[in-house]
Image (cartoon, rainbow over all chains, first blue to last red; front, top):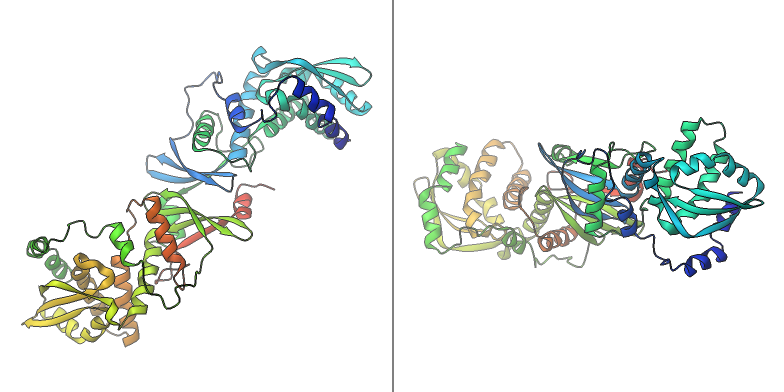
Length: 243
Length: 243
C-alpha cells in the first residue's frame, strides 16, 4: 500500500499541476531547506547551545568537518548534515505545533485519491495532521484536497510527505496519541531535512551549524542518533600515539 | 651534559656567525623544509604508495584533514603532519646515505667546543655521521669544525641537531652499529621535520601529502607511530548509528 500512495504523489498529473502553479522543479534545494528553518521565532532564541564552530570542509557530501572552539582548545568535529537538520526541523515543528505560524496555504489545493484503508487512517488522524499544519478537506469518496501544508516542508514536497506519514500511522496503530503526534513530527523532520548526498557550500554549512547551535538538544537527532562526533586534540594525539 | 651542548648551539656567537653569512633567520620555514624533501631522486620515484588525496583543511595546526579517493569511495583521512614529514625525511636520508648527494658544505664551517665525553662520542661515531652527510674536523682539544651537514637539514639547523645526535649516542651505547646509524637517521628526520604547531597553507599540505605518497611505508613514521588515521564512509556511518 505504501507504493500505491507514493505512486500517486509522484504521478505525472501531480507534477503537471505543480508545473502549472509555477513552482520551480528544484524548489526543494538546500538553500530553500535552510531558509525554512532560519529566522525562526524560538522563544529562547538567545540561547546558543554550542561553542562557536568554524567550517573546515565537507566529506563525501554527507559530513561537515569543523573546528569547535572550546575553552580548553579547538576540537575537531564531524557533523552528520542530515541528522543535524533533522534536529533543527524537529525543534521548529515541535515549537510551532498548533500555531497559525506553522502552516502555509497552497495556491491551488493538491487533490489526492487514496485507497480506502489510507483514507480511513487519514480521517482518523486529521486533527493531529492539522496541528502540524496540514489542512485537508474531503473531496469525494477517498479523495481529498490538501489546502495547506506544514511551513517547514516547502510547497513542493509538502503533499509528497503525506504518503510517508500515512504509512507510518498505519504501522503504528497501537501508539498513544502523544507518540502519534511525535511520529508525525519526526517524519516531517526526516523527510524535509537536507539529505546525505547534498553538496553544501561553505556558507550553507555555516548556516546549518548556526541553526543547530540554537536547538535545545544539538548533540542528537530526534531518533537519538548523534548529530556530531568530537575529537579533542588530546584524543587525536592519543590515536596517533603521541606522548 | 645535554644542556651544555644545546647551550653551545644556541649561543650568541653562533647566531652572530650565521647572521654574518647572510642566512635568513627564518630559513627553516615550512617551505624550506618541504623543498628539501622535494625533487628527490627516488630510485623508484614512479611508485606512488597512496591513492590520490584531496586536502579538506588543517586542524589545530597539527593535523591535515583530507579525502582519500579509494576505489570503494572516498575515505576521510586525518594526517599527523609531523609524523608524515618524519617518514618522508627518514626515507630520503636512508636512501641517499653514503652518497655525495646527501651533504651540503657550509660556506664557513661552524666551530663547536664540546665536553670531553661528548667529544669522545663524536670521534667514535664520526664515520656514521659522515655517512649521513656531516663532515667534521678536529680543530683543537675538544673543538671541532663542522664543514658539511646533511642536505635535508638546511644550513641553519644543521649544526644544532648535532647536539641531539650526540646525546642519543651517549644514551644508546649498547646498540649495534646498524641501530646507531638508524638512530642518527631518526633523529635527523625528527628534528628536521615540520612540527605540530606549524600553520600550513593548502598548497603546503598538498605537497606534504604528495611527498608522503612516494615513500615506501607511508602509513607509519620511523618510530612506528601512525602517520594517518582513515575513516571509511561506512565506518563513519556506523559511528553515527546510520543503518
